Amino acid sequence: MRFTFPILTLCHGGAQRMLVELTNGLTARGHQVIILMPLGGDVSYTVHSTLLITDYPLLRETDYPVSDVIVSNFYTTVPVSEAASRNGKGLHVRLSLCYEPPFLPQNEVSFPSYHITDKLIVLSRWQQELIELGHGISGSIVPVGISTAFKNMHIRHRLQEPLNITAILRKVENGFSWHREQDYLVQQLDSVKANLPEVNINFISPPDEFYSSESLQSMKRSGKYRFFTPKDDHELCYHYNGADIFVSSSIFDTGSLPGLEAMRCGAALVTVYSGGNLEYARHEENCLLSFRHENRLAADIIRLIQDPALRIRLASKGEADSKRWTWNNSVRIMEQTILGFLNGNSIHPPLQSPLLQRLGGFKMRRN
Image 1 (cartoon, rainbow, N blue to C red):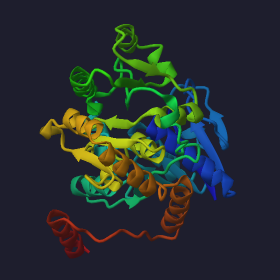
Image 2 (cartoon, one colour):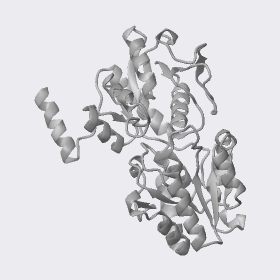
Image 3 (cartoon, rainbow, N blue to C red):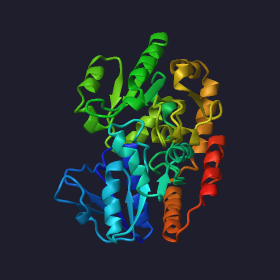
Image 4 (tube, rainbow, N blue to C red):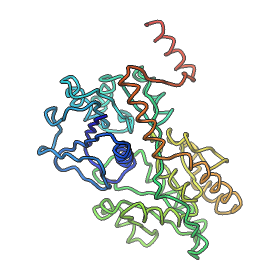
């Protein structure tokens, strides 16, 4: 098959990682994949597909090559992809890597963009139900995966360091990071340090974000925290392996990759419910999971610090559970889903919640 993926940027981030993994995977399976990118887009990952960069900062319908399938993602790529599709340049399928309306500006634009095509791919059951409730469209689930670069190196005992508490911290200047609850994260980690001063508090940040962020650099200058800026997956894997406890405070994610990657590297996970992370996170089984309103993040971290047996048990189970999440599996399901759309059919799991069951009944009566 011939694919066109209009992508605005491939800077460091979970959504961009999934786009790279899917496009690289489809290319490895013998498909012709073109990544169509506007002038000025960043490329921070290794790309094996054909990269077509336009001479204009916005994507135009005339930029699209003829293909079998156009896979849009971010809401601003959806209308122009539909226009290209209507001009015979390929079947338009939307890959929703995040549900933009509740947490990004211009929700008056992003919300109706979900009415443009009913051929929809989502990352999790939570996201699927959210969109179905809002728009009456049931997306097909293509799950996230974990790169083979991430593994448990079994080096924690050799580091001879105090217990390491690690989290991702992103740039807040000129960005949309409120859903990550980073102020809450830092406040909770400060509380842990105040109660147990012997532990290390570590933050992982993408290099380009750290070196262009005065707020992150100011935090480093305070001397209270260690900052790591891994340039690639191998360095990121090493820092995950240095973490005894990995912490995530995000409250709105369709997939929430870092927690899953950290589990794969043998860290015990303490996390806040974010929607999509319920695909892999199970409280008291492979992590400690709380709702944001419970304000329990610091207490859960301290619990794992003071209970090494529980920490080791959760880390071990989390690592074992993470092994089913592979990008090969994601690419295989993506390929099957696209073939289903091209053949005029798609398979959705049965509706579960009472509200969704009522919505399903409404659809059946309409038909």
